[in-house]
Length: 542
Image (tube, rainbow, N blue to C red):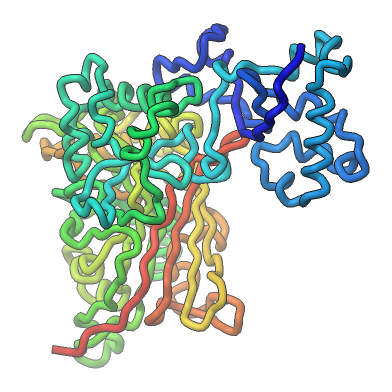
């Protein structure tokens, strides 16, 4: 076995096991097969083969690499890159020696060759930027973007640090469902695609994962198409992913509801009588939902800080953030026709991060008897990339135990809770870096998205593609899991330490709030990007 020794270091996944034991290259028939992707590993391309460096790490016995053999078992090149030129030259010399026809070590060891070599046709290549990214091939979230040369918003999919422009490849969607609906990818929102339903979503996902596999020549070898289809995320402007007709915010964290109840009603009356029987929610303001990065103006409003005095008008003094997630509705339902909980999953397109900005002093004065109004309606921020539910399926965890058992229309056995790690960071003016103030997890939610959707429609309320349904503040059992500053400061009685000489009880002008979230897989993560907003000073009083 002799090779022309030109070496390129790559990241790959062997895909032979993903297609029923066949080794004809990556051919995912349906997206769930991707939930079992093996761990990516480091290899060197040689001819039409890949030499798996994790299989031969024990052969790196030179003066530098003998102490660093484990860098070749990692799922990115970062550690190897960090070793520097001496290590790189040593590795290159060894590899060229091993691959020379005169060297018996690989040539004559059939067992080692079997473990060490993989056909490039049966492997998935990963963009180096996609491996250590929120957006690997296991994710493929949808969003809407524009570029300076093409200012009209269009639909794309995030892969690594790139965006795949679906309007540029719409002609490739030739499956039984999408062949008649290719034009949904030329629209400036995702509403029409959302409305097509699960069969179309799965068909699109399977095609995209196939196109992005290294074994598929359609994108790989068409330089002109690649040039039109890929855009750097750094050069793009993100927009709201959908035209949001209606927005509903739930109140589905038991810990959060309990904490708020203790603050305002005492421990004995922490939960309202209805809370354990139904997913409480309210109708929010869709017009003020904005995409991540949009500055948030401190709201003006009416407050009553002193109960012995009349109310006053002025800028909110207790501006808060709320760590939330939200999902977009796919196909809707007709007015008067509820969605049964057994079918609810067919109406959920995907999820985003959300910050439900809250003016606590305005909210406290106005919310009785009809609930939130101006204390919430001034702004809600969502992340731009919608992570599809198929990408989250590998991270499903058991639903929380619900006692008392809900009414039958809210009961389901399908696990529909997800292990999503969430964090909130705050960067104030004068701070050199952001300080993490909260770490929580979506799995702490008491009511599931299926229950929220079924309850929302049980009275016959019609939902439409692109409607946004939010979780409510996501708080966990420990103080560090509390998902808003009202809880973290315990109603403004305890300072939140930021370090760098700064503390907060509520948000100040100039504060930038950064929400992030991801699901951790074996050697990859499915992330949501960021949900950010910076607080601007209030307008002058009217």
